Amino acid sequence: MSDGVSVQPTARETEWHKKLVEVDAFAIAHGRWPSTTAESEDLNDPIKVQFAADEMALAQWWSRVKYYFKKFVNKQPAPGMDASRADAITQLIAKHESLERDGVWDARYTECKNKIETDNKLWSYKDKEHEKTVRWWNQQKTFYRKYRKGKPFGGMTEERANLIEGLLKILGEDTLVQQPMQDGSTPNDQNNNQNNEQPGDQSSAE
View 1 (cartoon, rainbow, N blue to C red):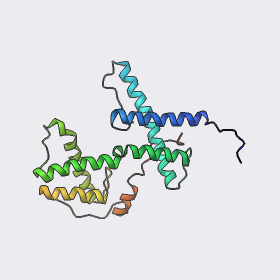
View 2 (cartoon, rainbow, N blue to C red):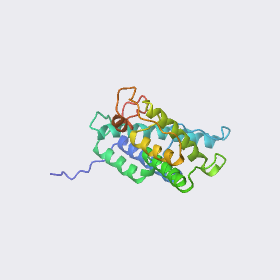
View 3 (cartoon, rainbow, N blue to C red):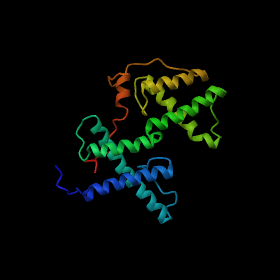
View 4 (cartoon, rainbow, N blue to C red):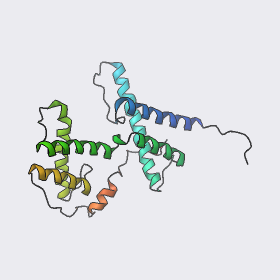
């Protein structure tokens, strides 16, 4: 039975949600999550230097929060995380689904796939508009080869390796037979472990 007294959020809880709103606002403004490696493009401009420092601090907080969110979802110890916070994070991630690692990977892959299926080739490195996508593709080919040789690297999984291999076949490039994983895991293990990265030495999701 209610005693008619409303429960006010603590200062810590208010600050936590304020940070989440800042992450949302950053994603809307810049089309990406804040980066933990943010750097000022002009070290002589104090405003840009401060912006980069603020972005890095926000990114470190977001990385820590997402780490404990994933542990909470997997029913593992997650200090500072609860159902209410997890629900807020779930909604924010769903709102910006394309910014998640899989979303970014899928977007780049689709871009390459459409180009390769249309022209049987990718853009030249000289094409500045697609330079990042070409660089991404070459990285994925490297990760694919390492993965097929039993050395998981760069977030490559069995599913992604198969997708990259399909495009390599269209291009007429060599593909590789899967070798046993050197760490004793299986391709399915790599799929399951893809997002188990730790955000450094962090103690809680505060």
